[in-house]
Amino acid sequence: MHKKLFIPGPVEVRPDVLAQMATPMIGHRSKDASALQHRISDKLRQLFYTDEAILLSTSSGSGLMEGAVRSCTAKRAAVFSVGAFGKRWWEMAAANNVPADLYEVEWGQPTLPEQVDAVLASGRYDLLTVTHNETSTGLMNPVEGIAQVVKQYPEVVFCLDAVSSMGGTKIEVDQLGVDICITSTQKALGLPPGLAICSFSRKAIERARQVPHRGYYLDLLSLYDYIQTKDYQYPSTPSLSHMFALDYQLDRIMAEGLEERFARHAAMAEHVRSWAREKFAIFANQAYLSNTLTTITNTTGFDVAALNKELGIRGYQISNGYGKMKDKTFRIAHMADCTLDEIKDLLATIDDILK
Image (cartoon, rainbow, N blue to C red):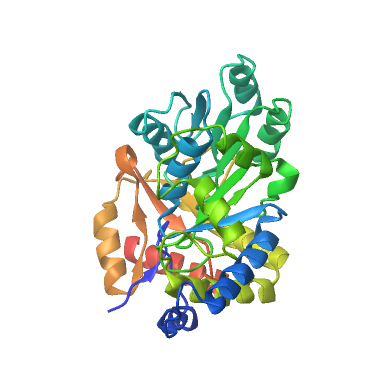
């Protein structure tokens, strides 16, 4: 029995979107492949609100996160973490011998602009990483305020992890001054996992040219230079099946309307929050809540695994808490092509099980 997914990813994928992955193969060095990848990039520029380059990577979002910190850190990286996935960026830097310092806050609390300012004012850093939307805690960082601070430090390459928010929340990349904005297909974009996407600014390009050891497969400059000289083709064989589905899904997203899509996500988020406040408690700081996922404190101490088992019998799946928050919290995703009616049905089912 298929379980309808309300987890942080992968998300539920529409059957018509899945069907696009069965499109017959084309040669990855063909004009058709160039046209496909060019078309996708143009649509993604609209979604990212950017005029900068778009890079596609046959990897998870973690691949481009690693590529960003390795390709564009010439001096030292400042890594800000509000949960499990922010810390991952620091671990990637350490594994690649990239000098980096980790700045963590208590889980459930945001990275504040003044914290970023205090760190960058030291002059030690030329790259900054920030998590926009943290799925372990259900928190969305105040990226607009952070961006205003970063603009005061033009030598700093600004990297933003928007893996779980792009497509569900408006992120105006160019206006914010984000140099590398990263997302992947299996969350708010509503596609299967396997493809990652990032914007790549002119500043980031010039910085990468100053970094001698950028790796190979995840070298962002290599990807950029190749698509410039080879008409939007990539150095290694890409997942064309994902690209067929992405091309189709981006048309669906534009047909819905970006503002309408963001409003739908906000409405679903608010409905889950209202339910959570009434029945339990919301984990993260109430002033910085995610529009794509809510982390709920298990105030009644019920068995989260048992709930999920019963939900599975009824055709649903939610997520337990992440890492150290397992059983203390549970998480409900409300992103991609999920609807408010589906959220209402899920919550009614949880109420019925826990009554």
